[in-house]
Length: 116
Length: 116
DNA sequence: GAAACAGTTGAATGATTGTTCAACTATTAT
DNA sequence: ATAATAGTTGAACAATCATTCAACTGTTTC
Image (tube, rainbow over all chains, first blue to last red; front, side, top):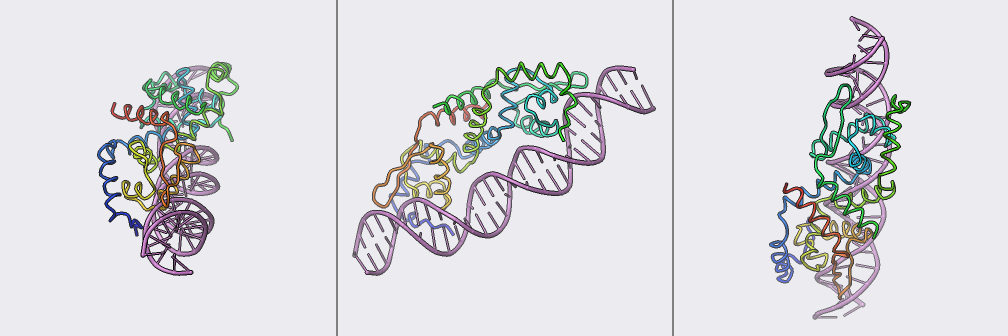
């Protein structure tokens, strides 16, 4: 049950209409949340931050982040599906790099924010 | 067990050293992930987006987002603890607003990104 | 061809988390 | 005082998710 007595209230209805018309599309907000959800994991942020320094293979990332190749690979799959990283094979190794510099500017803006 | 045969490898050790020195501090990356974790929920993004339009009470937010006051209140507590929103009491109602315009620029940058 | 290395994948597990529900506090109005 | 409205809180439940483990594919080298 929804406990919104104020739904009958004219004032609240007006607020609701006025605000919703100026808000970004519901779908866009949902997509933004999905993007942030991917950034919202320290492993994935560290992967992206490492790839911002240099193109690296899975084994390199495992060494830099001190994680198993399996765990890194699982997260790379998520980053790949979100089109945040791309990869290329060279012999036995598969090198990963950032797919878009735009991604980095979002992380850097957040880095500025937490440093107040 | 960590399955990193390449830990003995000189090449990988060099990559590890060279990359880690230029990466942001481990703690900062962890904090950024925590910030993104908060953004990574559609309810919270919608709350922030609504508050970007106007200062609103919990009841208003419930009406705009079509959610119970309880659910909204729970998310507002998380946003409060992260210092993303502030509040003031006026009679029975408690009005919430964005604590920082910096927050909005991060969301807007993400909005630009998803629109390719 | 077999061994070794790089990487992926699926199931299982443990932890985290968003919403609901009920009970609570605080303020206003009758 | 008491009823009504606004908001908070804690427990419970379901759903999501990151890591581990084992088994697998693909490539190189001996």
